[in-house]
Image (cartoon, rainbow, N blue to C red; front, side, top):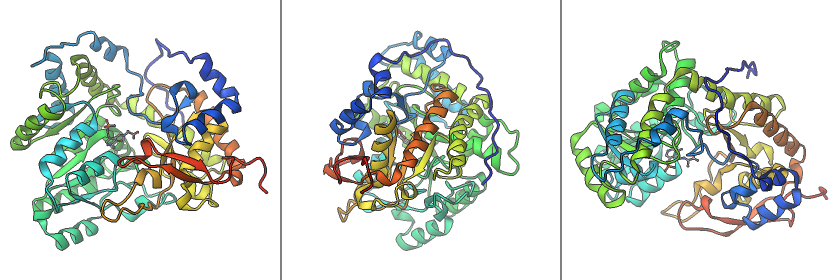
Length: 476
Ligand code: F0G
């Protein structure tokens, strides 16, 4: 794969900065402090305090930098219980950019997933997905549905450079339809720029074919549009006929082939909190409004303050600016290409929101049952004070029917880049730290799980090192 790279300058400048504390600077310097912190956290980076983190690549969710325009919107919050003017701004933004008719705000993405799953899924249903996202799958399962993976095989191969690893395998979908019947498939769950595959897009060509198949069997398509902007950018860069097309137009086109969506505004739209459910079907809208008042809040605020809806509405217009998304993905690629040039095994093509280290190749001596990606994530923190996130066996959890651990093909450490937060100097530091760790890779030890929560275990599980030290001083 080519490592040719050109820096794209960002279309903003910095007006306010977040100061690191003395404690955070100290963490970067003191291995002893990092060792204490990661042990106390049970080798789970979710359990570290932010004060113990130097560079935070845990997630790009709610951690992006809002613009002056978004902050100004915060001051214009209309905190009326019902009919806040900010709701109407949000509704208009969703209609203009995504193109859906109806909008129900929720406190974040999983709030919308919860409501959608409750309404559409009944016991015994099967829900085809292009891979999975943790919260979306869990809500499908809690509604007594069965998740079925219909992603293409390339999505599970970190070394395949296929440009559209988010595509749906239509043959797998058709087989499911034949096996269980359309009446047992409430909708096709389609994720844009598939997070767990490494931030990988689907193509419009595949989406159109999916739409044709779903039309034939009258199965609606429900999009997880959380990362649709990054998907649209990859379409613009890679798909025939889309060069030079505005991102906004591609986003609207993607959504036009679908019947509704759940969205976390904490990613593309760069807010600290917020999400929504959107759809074109009035009956679904009416049911969603009935559910949102039970779990989130009134249907014109859905658990959000008026100011949160205003900053999300403004973020929706900002996110489809071509220069913005080009610079955002360019920074992720800047880090990715540096690691590739240093010979570090990462998922290719480089994703939209993160660089994913391939733990199976980074620490091949750690068996999958000893959580190689979790061990690598903890080791990177110990080495550098950089916090990433495990996306492997721990995140995949257990099969709800058998209770057995799922064994995903991908064992990844995700280095997620928040939008407009770090500079390329930070990327240089991160690349150096990963390279240093790579030189010690044989000394990294596996883990055993000593505490396991029932749901979404990756958030709170605790581990112990198999061999005393997480990074051994000597090999023997
Ligand atoms: N869908 C996708 C593709 C996501 O990445 C997320 C969140 C959600 C849905 C749920 O949204 O957090 O607002 O409830 N992803 C975060 C991450 C947590 O770190 O990737 P939420």
